Amino acid sequence: MPYASEVDALTSLIKQNPTWSAIKPEHAARMRAQNKFKTGLDIAKFTAKIMREDMANYDKDSSQYTQSLGCWHGFIGQQKLISIKKHFGSTKRRYLYLSGWMVAALRSEFGPLPDQSMHEKTAVSGLIEELYTFLRQADSWELNHLFRALEEAQQVGDSAKVKDIEAQIDNHETHIVPIIADIDAGFGNAEATYLLAKQMIEAGACCIQIENQVSDEKQCGHQDGKVTVPHADFLAKINAVRLAFLELGVDDGVIVARTDSLGAGLTKQIAVTNEPGDLGDQYNSFIDGDVIESADDINNGDVVIKQNGKLVKPKRLASGLFCFKEGTGEDRVVMDCIASLQNGADMLWIETEKPHVGQIAGMVNRIREVVPNAKLVYNNSPSFNWTLNFRQQVFDAWASEGKDVSGYDRNRLMSADYDTTELARLADQWTANFQRDAAREAGIFHHLITLPTYHTAALSTDNLAKGYFGEEGMLAYVAGVQRKEIRQGIATVKHQDMAGSNIGDDHKEFFAGEAALKAGGKDNTMGQFENI
Image (tube, rainbow, N blue to C red; front, side):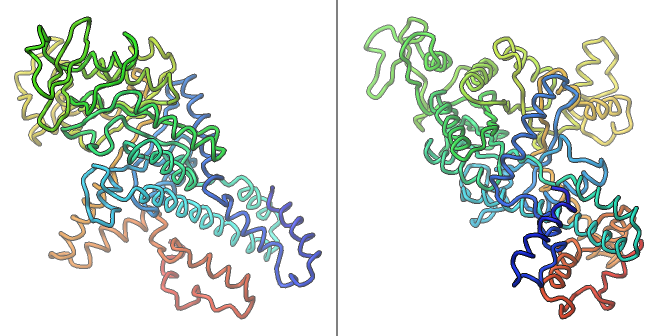
């Protein structure tokens, strides 16, 4: 409802309640406008529709891919969206990513943990709620500035400006965007997955990403020792997430099925199979083993399966885990992805060991032979050495073209000695184009960086500490932080305002009128940053 109409409706309501005479309808209408979303489910339903529309637009035009950055605190997510609106004027096709890795490393009460699902699972839904609390506050903060400007225009009788600001209020674009939320491997059995998914959706998640590793053996996707589960186990968890969405009325909820099979050489169990060629049989066909010629080849405790018409004794480690055949990773990825899309998942996540458009496209093209509109969420991971990978890709491309590469040592391409070379410049160009190329050629709908602010926080802190505790002293902060905030127009330079001080002052006036004791007077040092 437009702000002016909201004022009219509230004026009528307040007149019907004589004891409310101290309440100004403009104040109540303003507070409603500054709180568009009342619950997490409101947010989940709103953002799910955004994401579905974006997916449909990508299917029509692959240049319409989406992006996000991972974050581990509500303030970080808030500042990302404020920056996006500042620089690009719109949040369209820009999301947030909630990384299980960062929750483990930065949010657990146990302290920093590896990405092995050892952190409190409620920390995930707690972070979703926190992120949306800060994004809602960003709406309130931005609108508060507009309402203050509206009051000033009304006081001086500038009707044209009043009309313009009211239009800005009525057409305000929210900072609330979709969050792709990492549920790891489900934190237990399918029931545990369902219960956590419900918490995440109630907190506002419209998109849940789940992986096909074993919950109690879960590893970071870019480390060794990954163990996958048979498809029946994974699909049960996909069903659990879908039913959680449907139970809560988020019918457009999005499920991203992640496969770690490319780098996973182990399985915890042999799949149940009822007939040749079913999913269980296909899964078992990749298990490595020795053909059994007679019963004498079977030792106490051995397991025997039928594979391609022959009895095979799977290779089992001392841990009890079974080994997959070497070189079967891509085939297993393709099988995983097709099974997931045909059984309830909306999108895929293929965890790879390097950012290579050709490698990803090779797998996606095989998947699309069966599911033509298959789409990926892709991890532009800081675990990759992007500089080295793309310089090596350029080196290999030049070598295959017959170009002279004798001036380069492929194993030393990360060296700063190469930073100004033609090869390095082309590699940087390929890196800049990676997301566009992969969206077009490899079916990637959404590009994300899982851990960006983990690294930016460490880098900026290192630079500040080096100067502040060194010769620069206070200048390290002034020149390296505050002056840059001022020059670049970053709103946090007025940190009291960003934290809600002005909103609080206005509320105090709404509540107590002229008796309000406000913080924004002449002695507030934030005034030093006005009109800069």
